[in-house]
Image 1 (cartoon, one colour):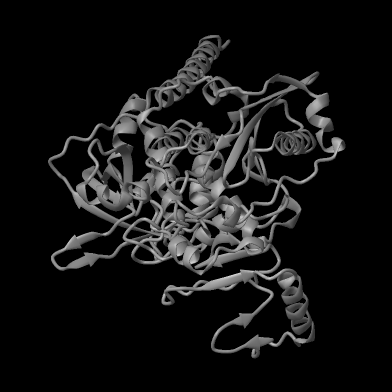
Image 2: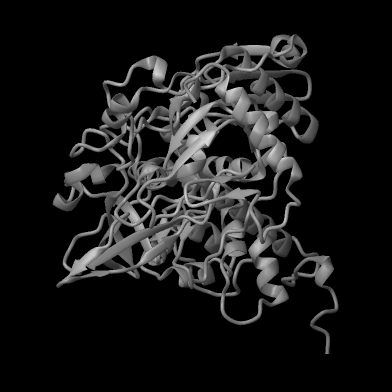
Length: 541
């Protein structure tokens, strides 16, 4: 491969072989004991220690699915071995993947394709719309504090460890989406995304916005698969676009232009809308403020999303931003949660109606209703399925259930805080990059849940897994009951203020309705206490 013209010669030769192949899955166009020719990337077999791949489409030499060298400038034999053969941990990154040795010369390393040419017409919407800011902090965009609430910290940490699980090559296996992460960097532009690449990227971008309820393989929670679209609405007011090369300014502006156009075309109601341009390695958030007369927009700077494979911390600005954006109060959360939960028994029409609208009628009781704070404390001590059942009672109970559902739930455990101390088992080998310990509760019993690692019981590992709606990702989990531990059952200050404000308004409306009803009863001409005219005749006989 090092001789002049060798790459072109090999490419023409193998292309001819592939063209003559009949495409039968029972045969390969060329296969012997040393190598196979194929038009598809090979699937990495975890039982094979080494898989070498000569990619003639992109002039890259891959090792175990990871891009290493530029075919046009391969190192000599001795340098090849120094750069690839592991010497203790020198040739491994912090996520356990084999990596090119630090001393490898830049000319030998593979080349990432440059950004595509962006036509001026692709920037028209960005340049013609009224922009109120181009490097806006998310806290300013959402009018929230710079300091994360405890629940936001939990959601950020859960997203961080999930991404770490995607990147890590543990003692078990590297997940399929880990291969997509490497492949995504090599895509020339967004028009050449395969269905698998789009699905992996869109699932990753959508993860902070799905109801944070996750269960095991045979549990009752099942998240639906995504269908490919140019734009994906992950919430009523939030849209995702999969792009590439967002670290290039013109590519970033083109992606924002497409998001603004999609929001204006698909949403007629005035309000605030959010768009996410996402490329696995980077993301950017745009806010579109639409009213009857004008439309303005602002956006964040491009944010790093995936951490470096040599990171010493799982945190990135992009992970934090998407987790916080997904944490906003969602009026449809209870409905969405019910849609992904397979509850035992048939669903009645009444349950469906209550799920979608809630029962706003006040119960016919003589005693005063329980205050919101007390219902919240009750709901915090219920099992997840009981919380969902509670939400079917009335609109008030549905919103109480929604407050509880804002906490992430894993295999029935409600995560309410990140553990203050990192377990000793996570310190070695950078395991803290893809595993985290949480303070949790299940039906009012305090527990500690370790997500990302199994627990050793005697000489065995207790195997429990968590299904994540992300390219079939399964994450190991362990839990330990701590019945004597004190649990802080506080919903965040922001959440409590928002919901309290809602119910103060509802109580005022109810008081006004009661006063009007009393006045109508007193003003009856015949001196009798009567109800509304609509009820005349209902009690006759």
